[in-house]
Every structure is written in structure tokens, then in C-alpha cells.
Length: 251
Ligand code: PGA
Image (tube, rainbow, N blue to C red):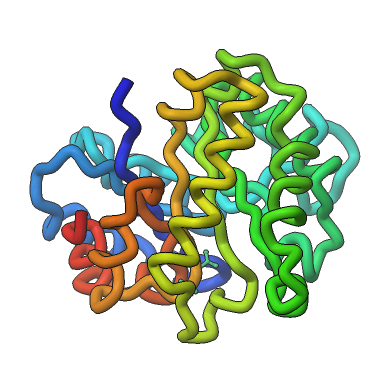
């Protein structure tokens, strides 16, 4: 099975309602037909509207950036998987390093979020990655391996086949420092080998593993050319349609 090449934008907490609408429209109008799947990861307030903007374009999908782990209830300010699904959401970014760092999320909690997103028929984009001190200590493969196992090992093969993994070294996010293509490839290969151990070759080979961390039009092609890199999760450069489109065109 061929795995999907994906350019996923993570807008984070940027873009008010009108700006978000305009950005989504600019991406739709500039997108070339291709096999690359383009994903817009927007704040909650945009989801329903942008779902309408992208609905006739088969290779653009919609992502939320988080989701609560419970079905519903007294969780003031939170948003449930069922709510996301009802707005036309296809993917949910889970376990982003900013959620881990500022909101105390860990892989046990992220595993529950993955479960509920799958239960509601959406696809998790599971983020993992090490901090600088871990890489400097040479423990990055071990740590990312632990993250992946804690968050994903309980899934069935059928469930895992719905998951996209994003490797995002924390030291490369929003810093302008990108992992070298070789560093990205090495970690992606490692992640795929763990998936192979747990889920078998067929599932591992079919899983899209994205790289995230300062991907730009100038470096995307070289990173995406690595054999185990299937695309990118793009923050800053996803906020400008021309940059994001250039990245989506870098496969
Ligand atoms: P960046 O963010 O592209 O701005 O580094 C990537 C991410 O956090 O997903």
C-alpha cells in the first residue's frame, strides 16, 4: 500500500475569523491538482466555515488542533470529538509539544484522546519529538520510541492504519533551526521500525510520518525527499498561502 504524502498546516493560535477565511480561500484557489493531501489545521472557530470553503476540493482536508478525551460533560471551555466531527473535521492534531509543554499533556492522556478521535471516525495526527537536552544527551531515539509506544501501542492494526505520525523535534519548532534531512530520516526510520514491531510491516509501511519544525519553501524539498519522510506539519510557513502552497508543491 502506498502511503499518503501530506502537507499539513498548523495555524496554532493565529488568524481571526476573517483572516482565516481569506487564508483558506487563497490556499484553495492556488492549489494545483496533485496526489499530495493538503490539511488545514485551524483554531476551532474556523472549522465549520472552512469546511464549506474546501468541500469541493478533494485533496484538501480539515484538522482541529486538540480535542477533549471525554465524550461530553462538565468541562467548561473544552471541545469534544463529536463536536469536531459535526463540523466536518477529518484530522485532529494531538500531543503537539506546545500542548505537552503549556498544558501538561503526556502520552497517557494523548492515548485517550487518540482513542476518542478514532471512535468518532477522524484521523489523529500524533505528534512526538525530543527537547534539545535529550538530543544532546544522545537519548532522542529512546525518548521518541517511548512516546510512540505509550501513545500508540494499544491500538489495533486497523486503528493504527488511521493514524498519521508527526515527528517534531522541539528544538526545531518555531526556532528557524531545522533538523538536517539526515536527522529527520534517521528518526523517521526509527519510528517506522517501532511501528513495524508492534503492527507489522504492512501497517508500518502504509503509515505517513511527517516532519515538523521550521519547514519552509527553501528546505521542504530536501526534507521530503528522504525515504521515510512523507510530508510536513507546518507552523509559521502555513500562515502565508504562497509559502504553504510552495511547500505542498515540494514533493
Ligand atoms: P514551525 O511549527 O513550522 O513554525 O516550526 C511546526 C509545528 O509546531 O507544528
